[in-house]
Length: 127
Image (tube, rainbow, N blue to C red):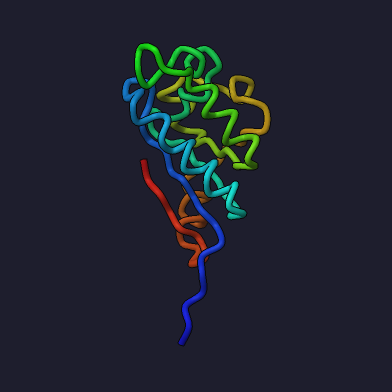
């Protein structure tokens, strides 16, 4: 029996601005997957919703001379990556309401993440 190739990627991000060196990697992997033609979504949980705040995305760098995180975010968006943000994490840990999310980013809950992760066509990457 031939196995089916997975056609979707789900990149789950839990690191926040306090782990700036890790924050860039999920956006780069998501952008690469989308550029290769995979349907790609990013799901932001725990401290990760804070990365989507404009002020934090502009200030966060992997190194003191590095490019701001906002460039990696824009790269993923331009590649067609879908952004989903845990509503509970955003409100409780990031102090972010719906108006504080970047355009095109949607609130989602635990059920959405679990359903997406359970799909056999989805490869899940966790950062």
